[in-house]
Length: 329
Image (cartoon, rainbow, N blue to C red; front, side, top):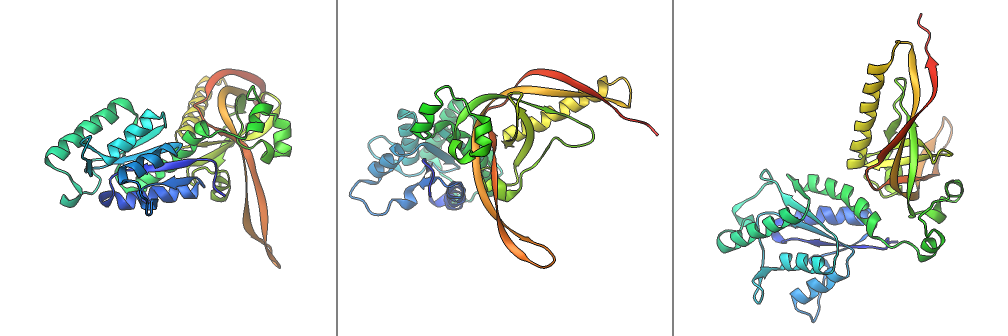
């Protein structure tokens, strides 16, 4: 079943076939509906009318630009790609922009020259002045970044179940109930405080296994999880991916460094809970996994639930819980 949400891929075609296919695979892998010229089929509308009609139906537009400006519409003297982009801007549809890096492979057939090159450069200047750009060196690098960006953006865009919104007008998640019936509250976005401790004896976060990450529509191989105390009362997993995972790694390293520098004695380590405020989305999923012992083999089902970070957390305070003394031999 597709999620509520459609993503349109806008780009020139022949030079970016592989890139479009990889991005489409990411979109469908995340269980969103995808749109693009490959899926139009036959229609009585003109190509431009059909393009703009499909853009108007989408929730998010992925714009990929390399070294071709593309086919130009006669009346406006603008490319179909630029007109798709302008339609999205007109309708206030969010746009994620990806430009090819200078190291991206190109040939004479995939480069526009002359007037089209000038129009392309002008279009790129517009994009650079209007958006935060990701520059990709390969189709795989593009796909990886899109897999990180889409869940973040769609979590801000999708309208959740109306009943849920009415029930939680203040955006509050009943965490005790969520942990018992996570599917009921899946998708709710809220602002929470969460706290965790840092110890030299263990890493406070760990990699989320691929099956679990896929079950909650997060990037496999680039998602980490943290066991945290939410609102000072409930223990729950919090999931970080992409730039949010980068933030957590930097934050933990910074905390650990400050503790190492400030401790008075080698055998004393302050047990401090670091508390942050963040926007999160309640997530729930399930997956199946083969299990076995010395005599049997079977398939078991596992649940995954927790909070997904959707904005960079902000530090609030730190609390000294106790001092752990280590004996030295």
